[in-house]
Length: 106
Image (cartoon, rainbow, N blue to C red; front, side, top):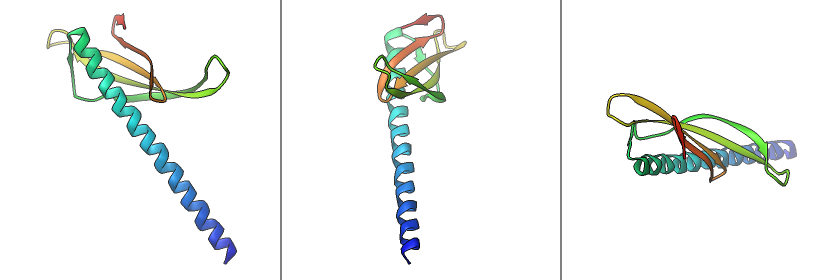
């Protein structure tokens, strides 16, 4: 019986950890969407498709040697209504690290 209880607690902990990871990922995507919309608005271009796309992540270290996860998102926009171009956003947690539009980093 003790082994079953331990397995149940471990499974519940794993589910809780996965839920937390999922929630943090959703929050980061929401932040990236707001940043993309704001970037397009300031650059006077049209944000296309209404959302960003997750492009990947990587682990890196900050200036103090602490590990952090960088998430990269891409989004499409147009300057003239005909040709699509791609922008990018890099987030460290919920903090903006970099954003750019094709040919013009901001």
